[in-house]
Image (tube, rainbow, N blue to C red; front, side, top):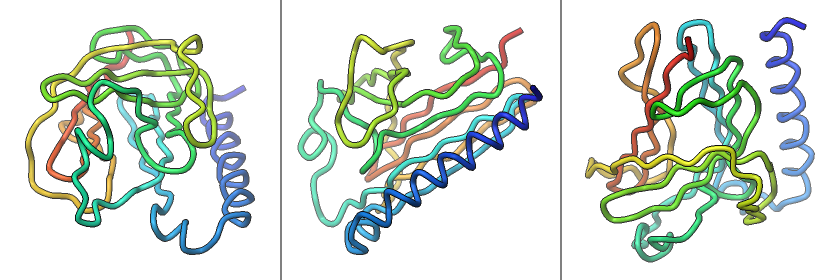
Length: 178
């Protein structure tokens, strides 16, 4: 089956499931951490994320609300879902095409990026489902009130997926597997 068709079907299912789940939650909760998505084509591979966008709201984020050294679901509500329509390299490590969840372990000087097989609501992280772990360096940056993902430095073969929240920016390099 065509990869684009499979990706389109998956996105439709995710949207339907998120919409059905959203109807069960109150409007206040959805507005507190609204769902968002971002997509980028790198080479012929599509990368697609869906995630909840928590806000700073005058809170200390990293090291307090989100403790250093502990697994974080990297967003709000459901686990952050990431889809790759082709094989990729994450920080130089191989990852097969597929649908995964994205977790992190924040640190002052180093973050662990975790690609996991299990998609779940809340904090139902299962380390036995980890597919890949890589480390990256966080960067100080301008303040962003609501957590966001975006892509930067995209070329025909690579790009950086960036997590940005509060005054921290965490770039993760994605390359097309040859």
